[in-house]
Image 1 (cartoon, rainbow, N blue to C red):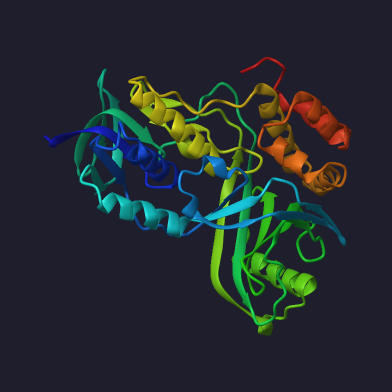
Image 2: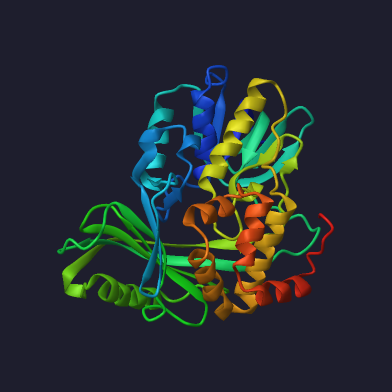
Length: 390
């Protein structure tokens, strides 16, 4: 029989969600002395990531932020729509984020790290247990981000947002370090088979992350992304392959999936991060939602309450997400036109509020009035989503 060890809290998964929650707990005066187990099958990430967001008020440590930009542009053909309002754009390097938190863990005696395969979860009433190949562990609360459990109330819309990017170091000073390109619908450099755009984060005049992002069912061969990026760097910035070197490559995919997910595995095991429904299906943005949920969890623990799952979006936002994913999936060539109209006829700050689900119904009516109606009406008729709140 495997030995059972007990802790106050167990966090399963050392990704953005698990490490963020751990940091919030360690920062709380009432909880920082709790005994915590952090478990994952590996603590070596295969790929580093860049997490971007608008609202830095949710970020517990401002020194996590690698760079911020005050100006945001969306490019459509030769025209750029620029936002210079209050919505600054920020990014965090996953490498620095993880290093910062794990160094903090080394300074405390209350956190134990175990590299193990989690084989299952059990509800023990007032406690819960994880079964692993390194033993069994119990706690009054378990928070996990590695096991995704769909709720079979209805089938969701599913698509992939996939990307590959170059960290470019140019011999020429061609980048504007004060402005990011949120989306550049450069059809000549990319592909016309689906909705796709380029994304540029300039760190200095000769350093930038340039990514190619697509919405489709399948990830492409690396060579396809690379060729598009090379064409884009040439057409947009006048860079031939001799003019720059690629210091690092970032790639990955985000499931655009609005399938309902279980908030808990059992009464004492809460799902967090993407596994807990914190990822917005149409944008992939998750990081600030993780911080928001972590704060709510910590507040509940400090007040001796059961933490609640990540709150589901209001029905109308779930419907918007569902319809857009249906359009991008069933009518991939309609996507670019929708995004062009969205940014051409609305202020970027209003679009960002909408994407963050902070807009009012009146704002949303105005936004949808600016978009081509036919794809949305067609998607609504075929979606099966219905008007009954699931």
